[in-house]
Length: 353
Ligand code: 5AD
Ligand code: FES
Image (cartoon, rainbow, N blue to C red; front, side, top):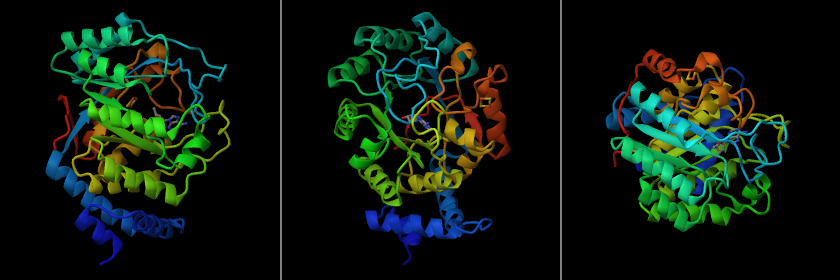
């Protein structure tokens, strides 16, 4: 049996086999105008699985970027602490609640609180915000995406009402991890955080950037093996996009085609996974999120942050949805999803497993 059929049949491969699958994809994409038959083949199976489990429903997550202040210095990230060229902001509790109120009226039933690792948000302050949202919107899921914190902190936040946590592993290879992050950050702690979140009963999201600097095919294979073993409920992947104020400013962006291929692979590996077509994918290709659905994604994360702050949360250059015209991303995405035969639903959108 060839690798693709083996993968479709067994929903898993080993590291060497993933390398083989990725190399086959690369060979088919080497010519400029060649359409990858492997990518089409896997996308067909990915969409079949996705439709069997989730139909044509697309879950929406209202993304509230509530602080761009960060104590870390990840080499790829535009809001890293040593970037002096951005104006820093923090939303007040009232502003965050206003985003939720607006979002609830628009039909959102999941709120994602995402931010830099900002020391202002102590466990007490953040738990208070989570508790307030939880009691005001008991029918909504609360997702946190605020980086590495202690077990005790994750425990308090879970107790306050947080259901899900997004913490991309960024790369499963420790040496590669160190090429993307300063020495104070470790791959080991990242993995420990993911384990802690899992043991506290969060629905956990992992993920990585496609085409991050120094990433090899072997690294990607290791990312896939990690996902296969850890089995997160959510997986966030998007192309790396350089930010002009980082040391990776001159590195090339990741490939849209490879991102789409990996979305299909991840759907086949974890058929029930919640898999967003990310804003980064939409930034690299005007139809990136639509193409993401056609590759097996089933989630979108429209921006619900106050329009006045959106430009300040630029993790990478040219991020979409940051202008006045993007005040209502939900309507925009509803049209976009309809155009490819899917529809947004007003639902918590939990993992059906
Ligand atoms: N390009 C693409 N994605 C990025 N992220 C951070 N910086 C960039 C960039 N330059 C991703 C990281 C992080 C998530 C919130 O955004 O993977 O985990
Ligand atoms: Fe934000 Fe289209 S999704 S403007």
